Structures are given as C-alpha cells and as structure tokens.
Image (cartoon, rainbow, N blue to C red; front, side, top):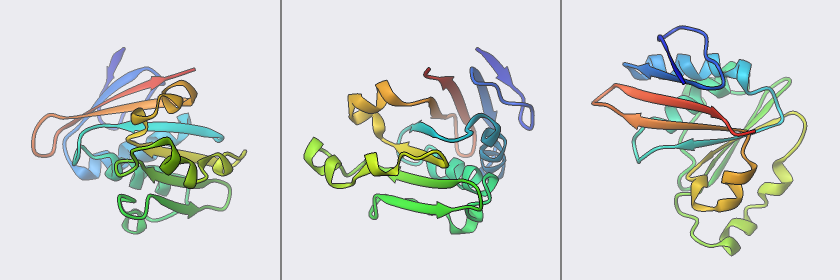
Length: 154
C-alpha cells in the first residue's frame, strides 16, 4: 500500500492523509473515478472521523448534491442524492443493532446499475464486509488530520 500525497491520484490500494475538512472533501471528489457504479463502499472510522465529510465530496463528485446539502444520516438512516447519471445513497447503521432492524431499511432495493451506496458502520453486519466493493478506513490523527486507507475488497 503506498501513500498518496494530497491532491494526487488515488489508487484502489492506497493511503492518503488530509489536513483539513476541505482536503477531505476534495479526496471524496477524486475517489469518484474509483467508484463507478454499481458500488457498495464501507466507510469505517470512529465518531467524528470524517465519514460524512468524505461523503460530501463523493456526492459532489457525482453531481448528485452540493457538499452543503450532504448531512449525516445518523437519525434518518438513509439519505438519497440523485444525480444526472449516478444516485448516491448515504447510509448510517450506527443506531441499527439487529438484523431485523437492518431488514426494515430495504437496502437490497437500493442496489442498481447507477447507484453507489456509502455505508457507515457497515462492519457491524458481516454481510457488508463480504459484499462491499471498496472499504475506506478513516483514522483521526489530530484535530484536522485524517488518514484514509482505501482498499478494493474484490
């Protein structure tokens, strides 16, 4: 795994460090080239790690939403952002604890040729670890610094 400098090209097996929320949003925009639909992407990291900030850039990169319109789906569970060619679904499973609760979300209905699913806290359910296409692990290195480990799961 190699480290990618901020603003550099991102490969499917790379590590990138950002130093501000703006750099994290820009990283999300650059990741669009790796996330051609259909894709299931697991966003892993502690609370406040930057998962939603990264999702802002991804949604914006697909022209599905402006970064200002992308918010955490913690209480809503699923946000949908419709773009001209790609729809982005931002899912937060932090408050979902059982398979029954998961089933009520109908996530299987969201899989389509022009959809990208960004799933936070998906590691709580083994199914998503097996089925994801890309995993992005986010580690906080300080107030604004974040390390992103991007792994192609398939």
